[in-house]
Length: 88
Image (cartoon, rainbow, N blue to C red; front, side):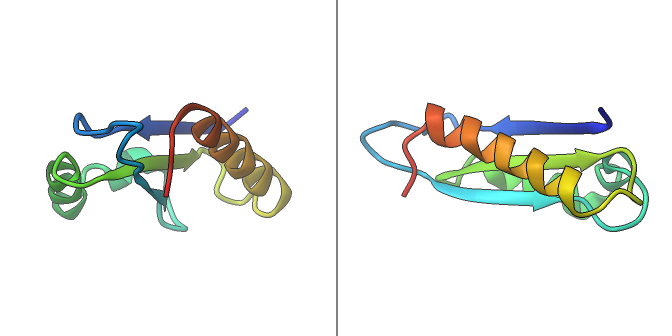
């Protein structure tokens, strides 16, 4: 509850060419919805398609909740990515 993640895979992804992994946490204040309104974030997303990275974007709706819940959510998200895609 209160924890979401998105997995972005470039169109160029191929199991024959393993991808790198980019794990993105939004900043310590606010929530991810506020982060995506920033121009730098959109520039990062525009350039994403040219990369060979699988991007996992984590979002925590309750910023005061640190430690265990965020750590466990990250492990869950990474386990899903490692089970689905071939990474470097």
